[in-house]
Structures are given as C-alpha cells and as structure tokens.
Image (tube, rainbow, N blue to C red; front, side):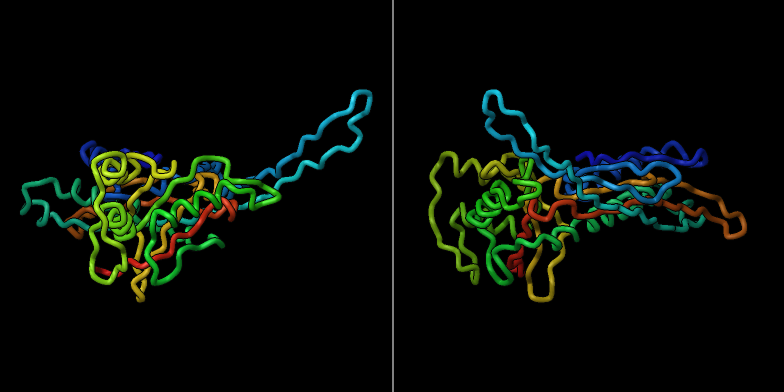
Length: 298
C-alpha cells in the first residue's frame, strides 16, 4: 500500500539500500493505513510550521425581484498550526557481521529502518483518534456494525454550525480484534465472553461482505474498513480506533524520510541513519468519531 511518502538519500547510500528502504516505506507494516487517510501538507524549506485554514460555511437565501442583497456574510477561517519535529533511528553494522552473513546486511537494516520510522509515523497519527470528542461504544463493550453505522450517521449529520457535516466519505481504522468481532457478528461465530448472538449467514451479500471488506476492499455502510496492527491495547483490554473523514486530521511533512550510511574505519563498520521530520494535528473535531471498544484476547 502506498503511503504517500517518498524517499530521499545521500549520494553515499548504495543503490541497493535505496531500493530496499524505498520498498520498506511502501510496505511499512502488514497494515498501516493512516498516512493515506489524512490530509497531507508540505512545509516549505526554512520553516518548521504550517498554518492550515478551515473555512466557515456560507448560507444562501431566497431572493425577491427588485430587492438588493444588502447584508454581506462575513468570510471566516479557523487556523490550525502544525509544527514539525524530527524523528529517526541509528544502527551500526560491523564489518564482521557483514562478512559473516551472505545477504546484504545494510539492505536488511535499511528495510528495518523504513518500517520502524513508518510505524512511528503511523502511531503518531493514530494518537489523534483519541482526541475526538465523540466516542462509542465505550470501554468493555464490543464494537458492532451498529456502532459503525451510528458513527457514519453522526459524521453525515449537521453537528457543527461552523463547518457542517463531514465533507467526504469517512474511513474506519480499527484494531485487528475489533475487526474480528465485527466479522463474528456477521458470521455468527460466538466466542466465549463476547456476548454476541450466534446466527447463520446464508450465501449472498452478507456472506460476501465477510470475505471482502477487510482492509478497505469493500465499504460497509459506505465506509472502507482498514485494519491497523499499530493500534495498542490498554491495560483494561480496550483499544481506540476511529471513523473519520480525511479532512478531520492532517499530516505535515517538513523533510521526507531520508536514509544515509557512513563508513567508520576506526570502529570497522558502517552507521546507517534514517530520519524524517513531520507534525500532525486534528483539524475538525466533529468530522471524526473514536471507536473505543473491547479487544481483550479471546
């Protein structure tokens, strides 16, 4: 899955390492969709911050022939500032390690670096889901398709007099166990302690959903559902996913993920450094819903 990120490298980085790190950014983790599901902004060189305006809406009125439009509406904008900070990882590969391994060790480290930085970026964006004021169904409860449908209804309702309903189709990003329990609800496979009713799903649309809605392949209630294994489980066995419009959250990149390697003759090895500079923020609170539900192991 493409992440919307690009790779830049110093001239000293080997062509093989460039390829491996680039591929690792495109395949950050088995599932890490957040980077493609939020608004993306680039911070200009020489600045570490970008201001994102959110424009208030206007209202049209019925007109009467011969009567002037005499009362102008004020154009307003709310500004959200995104500030970038640096993130990175350093590894040292000794000459002996390289010589004792047949595979390209530097390339393997490059792959691990790309995944580590990508995982951190994804996790930073996931923390924003906890900031939405609307949260359902609640700690200790199971997320159901009714939960998802309710979140979609909320986003498509005029809950915000300044910005209105969510402007685009929402996406759902959930913990793997949240998704498994949604599948249970459809398939009627009851696990001990879930409290879900057992039922049989006949061949047809519902059965098709079970096999095809994973990771956004097919939308449910018009919402693609993505699995993200970077969502954590708290000490009470609950996890926080979300249903949100792309415009609800933002990522600002100041410097793309960069990989460099440097030979250290005295230490008889090579240092590999991978860095990236970004910031993230919620943009409009009512365009997202936190899905807080039980994910304790079954």
